[in-house]
Length: 292
Image (cartoon, rainbow, N blue to C red; front, side):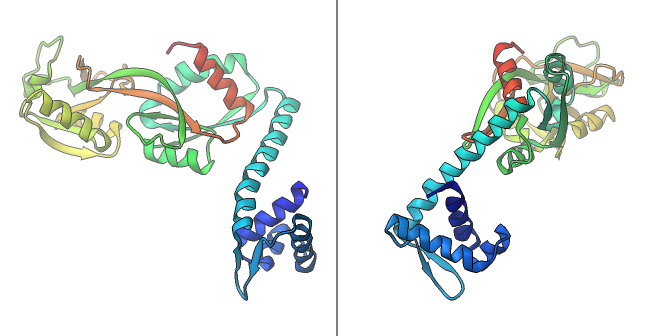
């Protein structure tokens, strides 16, 4: 049994019949049928029950399919790694990123990496954390920069930074009784209208409840930038992660909340047991040696 026979067998299983598999493999049906028969004879077992429309795996066929997938993945990963060594440190790094990290990624993550690997180019795919995790799992991106909380069941993660949430209000803060403030406490939010990004709703509500602060949700939305825009318009008090704040925005006041529970982490995530290009592995190595 060679790797080509194994790939052909896996394709038959995944396509459901020999005709579709032959089309996908760009070969005619009779040679593919003969290859399957030869593989069964070589192994001395029946791998597939042939139906009129769809093939069915035998128990031993199912075993070979599962083990064969692993073997093919290792084989393809090895070829990719060989290509990596041949190509050196060039290539394209595909990164998924959440919008709340749009300042952190170019300034703190990519800038030092680009100095060390100037020939690497980038493709950036943006979305919310759930969309970025989906991109990682589907192989659209090599790694993702996301914010906690998220489902990391199938992912490897490195936490880059823990940062606080901040309160954002219009510069004319007296509407909410915040004039001439230097600091702010959670109790200052009691009963006042707040605007928040929907995915932080549970985190924020839990912390407010824990501190016996009455929550008055004025607006739930799907982007922290929207939260800032509504706060800047003076409609409500925004609560967002600190790093999304644009320090050049002179229309808002920002107050850090020193609550241990009201913090998020910026993390880099990638698929477990899946090949990563050298460019991505180099970035992860740099992260492990750095302190963000």
